[in-house]
Amino acid sequence: MRVVSGIQPTGNLHLGNYLGAIRNWVRMQDELEDGSECLFFLADLHAISMPHDPAELRRATLEMAAALVACGIDPDRSILFNQAQVPAHAELQWLLNGTARMGWLNRMTQFKDKSGKNREGASAALFTYPVLQAADVLLYQATHVPVGEDQKQHLELARDIAQKFNNDFASEATPVFTLPDPITPPDAARIMSLRDGTAKMSKSDPSEMSRINLTDDADTIMKKVKKAKTDAEPLPSDAAGLGGRPEAYNLVSIYGALAGTSIDAVLAEFGGQGFGAFKPALGELMVQVIAPITGRFRALLEDREALDAILAKGAAKARERGAPTLAATYEALGLVRG
Image 1 (cartoon, helix red, strand yellow):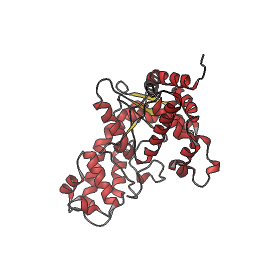
Image 2: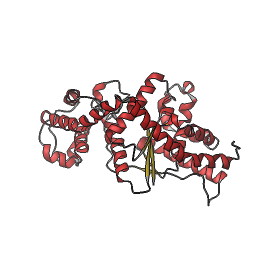
Image 3: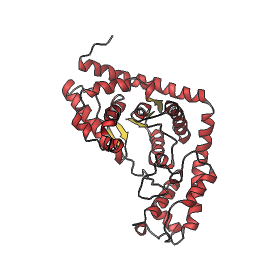
Image 4: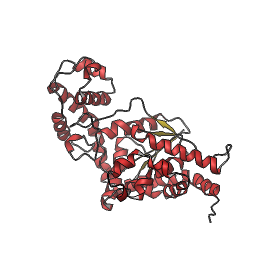
């Protein structure tokens, strides 16, 4: 089993990233059987598909590496690296561009969302970045890829590209690419904005009050939780009573995810109480979970050499893992390499 997943270094990680993805990365790392491995990468090549500041991208890449390690990704047990140090990602994308079809890319909903009304003004990289995503996982013969609802379409595209390439340029007995399967952890938490229970918590939201950053100190966390949007009704005694109450459902879900318990268990403890009692308890639990991460994160950021070494070591391992697939792809296409 080989698990591959990436995250764009576009700003500080927030609670939604941690509970929705990163915590499950750590669990997968910790639960892997002998002979299996995880590759986690910072998708800095993807970041240049949108307008960006080079200095900010460089800073964010190092910050994201520090945050992942602080959250529990162990560079000695997983392979942690940034794409730019593994040129095979970009090489394989170009080779796969000959197999990917315009019609497939035209159906990608995220391109439509990110380009907005100015599709003609969007970069070619934004249009073709699903092919780079395919290269990201196919390069390492990934067997499994953790995906949320918003990325399932892109993994399906990766499988389509792999299948067509195998059909066109390889034999059934010796395919070039493994078709990766999705992993959707059953307990993956979908964390919503503290200002709008119907919108996903996002680092792109202009309001800092909408999210809990993993770099927030205890006072900031308590302030944000206290000001989180709620309704006037007390908490119900069971989950059914949260219907039509998105903000209440979100806060109870966050508590349950942090405490490792069910929504019904949270409501068994707090049902009948108002948010004046529940919010302080939620804030204290957040601080308890996040404070150790923040401490490790800040210590790592102060040791730039250690961060550089972590990424360099991971990139070397990634280049080694990806080299056979890249060579086989060139060979299958009839390209002559020196």
